[in-house]
Length: 382
Image (cartoon, rainbow, N blue to C red; front, side, top):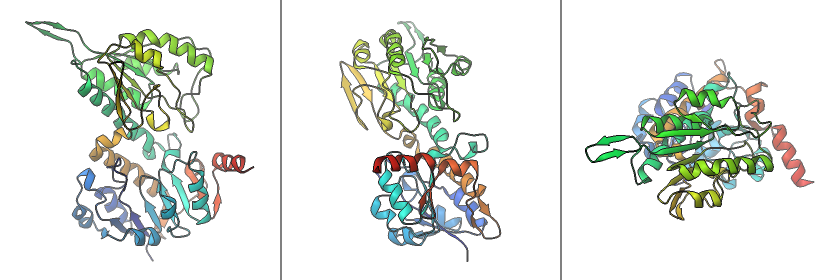
């Protein structure tokens, strides 16, 4: 009997992306899967239900039935506890899970014998690159952050020489030169801004310079990055030294974009209240780390506030601001994951013991199998 793959519509108002687009569904149908998608799954990404039907999917309006009957369930946002209770035992559930912060959900999925794959836990390795949801969406978020800032800034980005005089280019400061930061640098440069950037990883300097931006050097002592490519957490002393050095750069900036996150932990505060107060009225700060606590002191989750004349933008899910491209990219990532473990004979996913699944498989066969999450749950119950 062919495997049934269900694709859920995202209920959150802040989530306009679709987990799979019709091109991805078509690939699964050609592999012999029965694909059912919930009514309206792609509407907020400008994808009509008919586009899914054309490639062989069935359109289902009964969400509860889809949850209970799917052998593989694909979505973006993590399930509520009541939806986790409806999942089919032995099924594979693919979504963001926020496992470090939602241990109750992890325990419930284990109790239901659901094999839960956490998209944000896919390791950043060469083999898993095509499945790397965080990187694909971070690139779009970096672009969207600059566009948001440009809309809100009360001056233009590029140098302009006119009969009425010369307009100096806007100054943009990007803190964190990972995937999102590098895209923010590239986008701001394309718009004609004067860009400088900082990252704790010395290896980032070459990438920043290659995009035409200036790299800010601060002696913080020993820093670096994890095996997964994430910046290592700084000590409080290092953070204070960094803030003092960046104060003058913030004072001169028209736009500050912060992107620094430490995987599985609260984001570090890079821009203090003192730094915000030092900035010019009319300046704009966009915080891409707001979903993990924020890099900016005084940032408000999913809101836009003005403090001392400086506009602080803390919108969540910036990749969702360009949902058509975001859905296409995330769909490709998820399809790559499914195809990596697709067994042609059984026409289903077969979860193997390998380096990718060791990183992103959280629960399996009624147990919590991810060592870090299992250890975290153990410590909280002792």
